[in-house]
Length: 108
Image 1 (cartoon, helix red, strand yellow):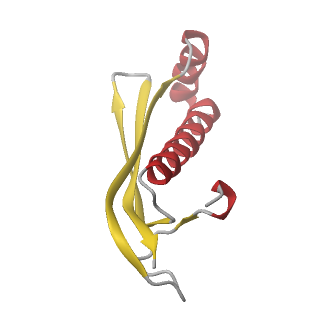
Image 2 (cartoon, helix red, strand yellow):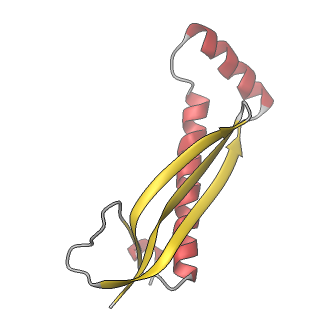
């Protein structure tokens, strides 16, 4: 199955598809911004508002984790991932870890 046709959904069922469960699948990443951007974020923290560099970092981390989830599921022989979820957490002051996880399935 081509990556562009690969289905990743947060729902349990894919309409019109019958499938068997292969197993759980994960995509993980940990990212950090550089020191100069951390200083800028620290200054923004004083005055308030969105810290766009961190928002961008989290968006990138989310995309990387989903790409890795998809790659890992394909390696398992899956056609789709159902019940996909995210988890994230901070490591230290300037690192963020994001995990995408779900259930890899094979169409019958």
